Image (cartoon, rainbow, N blue to C red; front, side, top):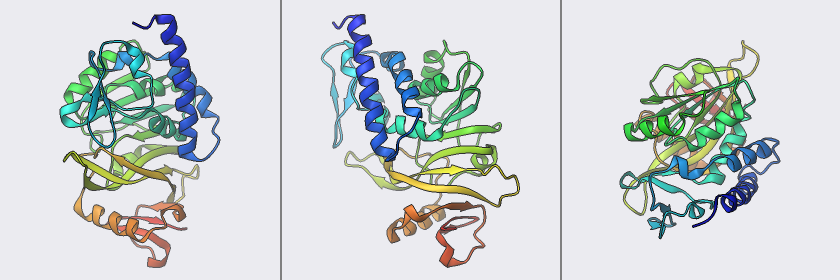
Length: 297
């Protein structure tokens, strides 16, 4: 069994490697990575997982079970099963670290994490928000919500809410991190963003993975409300491609159809604006859905 001193060193190495890999996803330097590295090094990943033996996700598809309960197996850049029968995992650390970095969460700010799982990445947000900040984790799966409440009990600046992140009431937030694939940004998410608020959300279409489970593919978008209260748009940009578990409450056929057509024609990286209207000239739009648009200007 790996000693606690060895695990501390292992967590430090893991944190450094994850932060480095996350930078490659965003293709940009980010001051947030040093803070995220510290948060990762300070957290025991084993405290946010079911009891050992653990199942480590292997690609393409499937899991490999650890031979024993040594936490050393957990400090690699790989998803770990939470509810393997539902294909729900503690996601890939570098991917989630990149999304968290894009949120630019500052001390004292309020964040909402939709798809909190068992709480590991919500705990990173808690570290970044600090004692004067506030984090709300939202989880649809009752079993995971119960796990998250237990796992985050030592954090004074967090609350876990069980429910559909696309429909539950939300207070104003500086940051919203959506950790599931949506066919369009929910109105309540856009309403909740404060001026200058940032949202990181996967906009995706449905597919079936090799194991026959539900999955979506698309792109991670950064969406930001301008500081100007009179602005008629949100700033928007595509960050990277993604495959991700679906956001069950935020999928509708019309939005998926519009999104699929937009992905098929390409050019997502040219998007700069999100409008809450479809009353825009066709030539300005990358995507025009019912009541919303992603536009080039």
